[in-house]
Length: 197
Image (cartoon, rainbow, N blue to C red; front, side, top):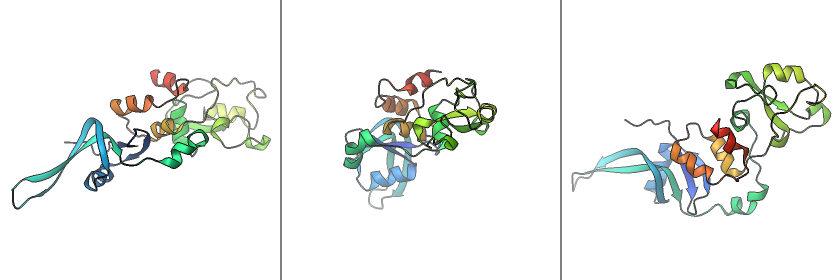
């Protein structure tokens, strides 16, 4: 029995990560002939109807990573300017669920988004100005900069690349998918170290 919660990583034909798709969308891509190749592990075998002539049942094998025809030219051109949408689940995962002030790891429900330069001091709600903070540290810091509150920021906030953002959006990233995505992370990405924690 397959776990239908696993997502399939979709790439373009050159192997550039594009998005996560569920098994229904992956089967649709296979059926429409849009899959150039599959790699990674076999995630699903989806059975279809029985052929009246041969008596055989059709099926589609769905791999954990599928490359589809074409490439995302817009993304390729804008790769250096790409800014992924900011949301708390991706932010907390970027920061490995660690409070960037006290260094403790917390469940997602106990975390909050902190603006390093507060909005009240003209700070912006962008990746390079936000960090994960536990509620206690965020309340203590309040509307001040870390140095004004006598707090030290443990890591510099950064904007994820497109491949890093794809990883941050993944719900249950499998080992082969993780290996594939890590190959697309910049060598200097802080996510490499955070994945070792």
